[in-house]
Length: 136
Image 1: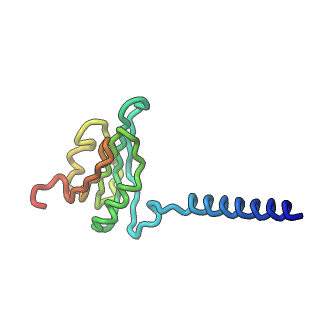
Image 2 (image 1 turned 180 degrees about the vertical axis):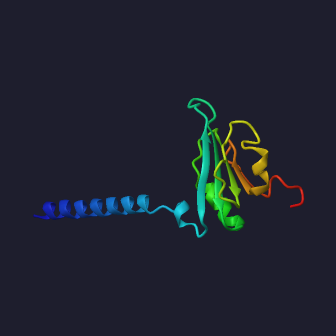
Image 3 (image 1 turned 135 degrees about the horizontal axis):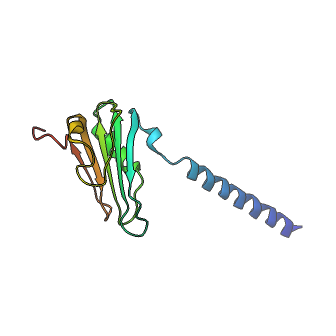
């Protein structure tokens, strides 16, 4: 009788542990938890799966909350030895296309870029306010 109770107790403990693991896995913070309004305008990913993966994102935001923009960049996918760049724009640009080489988009759109985030191959991240203007 005691061995059955021990088995039931272990089953309940394992079941409870599994429920906690599933809940914590599904309730991780993400882009949707940020206060600001962020809309992805365009994205680029190179086709290289064996070497450095380059990801570039263009995002519209209606606020200049620099910490939120940095948090948005932190939430973007990143691959070990890869590079992730996020450019934030203050206009919802329709014709924005991204390219694999710098400056990654047409110079006409640089005036609307209010911030840039980069996570390097070694995992270091940086954020720049107004990356294409010299006055800021």
